[in-house]
Picture 1: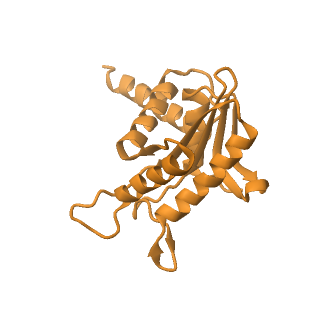
Picture 2: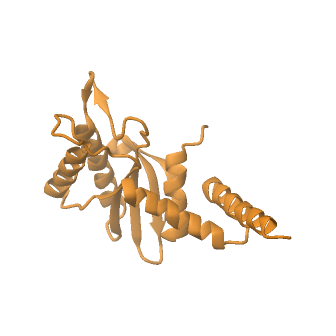
Length: 185
């Protein structure tokens, strides 16, 4: 099994920042024929986080079908299945549906393929069909979530189980140590 870095970031965020007691990556949902990238359950708050993750760095958010852009259809369909699953199995939970993608390109000119317009269309579809407000963790918001994880790792002294947080922890402690070395006479 290969490590999906995007899903690991989201799982770490849900566990350490949102305080979810249970995290499941790649949750297979046979009754709605799909898979949810990351699910977090906060038992104390009776909250359910349902997350889809798309890490497309050079192209930005870009799904295609038959050579044509397909962001709106693909992501709307994925979240439609996610919402149906969550509503069926977690009826009494407060549900948060999140799209995590670090780079959504903002065009400089009017263009036919506009990733920001795609995001708005996806949000509109889910609001219309399910009365769900999709939270999009994109661009600056994604970067801010990474910063939150870094701050958490910097403050934590015990070894963290998340590979992402352990990496950040090593980097932060190493930086602190190297800075202290350079301050010596």
